[in-house]
Length: 242
Image 1 (cartoon, rainbow, N blue to C red):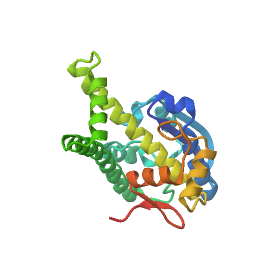
Image 2: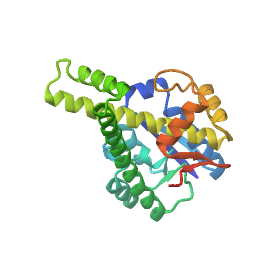
Image 3: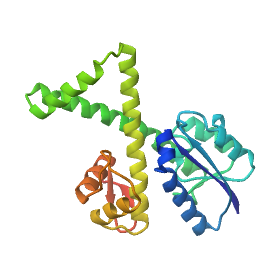
């Protein structure tokens, strides 16, 4: 079956560094080999938010206009909005590399879960900030310093509106970074990394830095996986059990 591939990253920095795009290409290539698909064209949207309807994005519009089934690495590369996914299902064919045999009903369920995950990540970020503020109120010196540094940054000539926008941008950047690292970790495990050290080595080999620009260690991988709710199994990365 002939298909076209569609890739999306939310910021220009991700597109220029290749972080995210390379992982998406590998997901699609792996699925194509397994399913016998022939990728006849590739389309990329760089610096485009997932909140924009796929048919309102330049590259995605061209991909769906080809008439071929559109393959994405993960469902959220199309959208985390259930309405977007449901609407596309009625008009176009698409496949998801991480679940290539999923039918329309299953994709709809995954869309619901993806939308829920987006809200969960946002709520967890807010909860972490509240926890930091509570620790600071209780006299934790480290928390007090972090709150102070944050307050100073917010006070640098920002209006109330600018502060609100700044918070939203920071949260979005953190969410985007976490999503990209999650993709990379899952891909490493898919390729056989069965331990924290193996995952760390894989991330380093792929030139994916930590949030501070350093190299991954087993401890750093463990913390990130805990934050993302992931665990290593023998075959794949799956949501951790409660």
